[in-house]
Image (cartoon, rainbow, N blue to C red; front, side):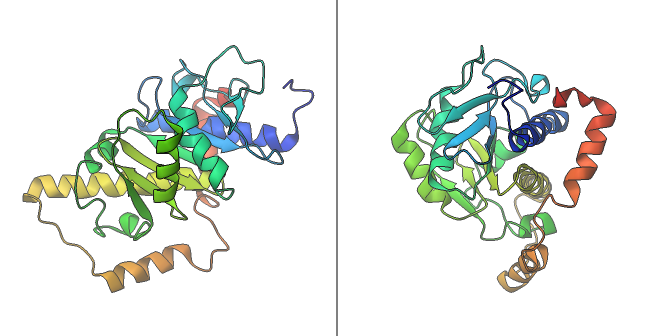
Length: 249
């Protein structure tokens, strides 16, 4: 779609999504040209934006994001293709869950390590308790390329905030790009703290009991009127603007 025909809502989504890629790169969350962050296009059912296959996260900008639909069809004249796993994972979630406006899937060092731990994320820190009983699990089946696996992944996600993809990585979803990003921030920070503590103590770590963990989760989410990312995202964009504002291009 040409810039002249693009809606302001799509343009804003492109900028936020490109910012998420750049911030992820700054965090060291990228895996060369692999993994994805996708965002639904406002007002266009079943249509979403995803990174061009072959570009590093640090090269993604608003204009080079590829517009596709949940039938694995490219909808613009982008010279780039899309990694098939971007359809199998992201397309399946966008098709099944309208509230998941952004899907963030990574292969980070800490996420990969957490994905090997049978007990998964424990209520060891405040960051972890934001995700108390909010993470599902999806068993490893090989490279995620099939529609059938996509459907199983969707079932495991349900209405949760994310998944631990066993032996694979992590995934979060959000009603906004900012929400999905901040949920991954909490997951990454919690995983790193837990795994470092486990390494230092031989696997023995202090955990909050279920009552305290549930109370902390309730304090995090409040009455639901403020989403994760609502307060943090403007500050993160200011940081990014100081470093390299070319994500907006």
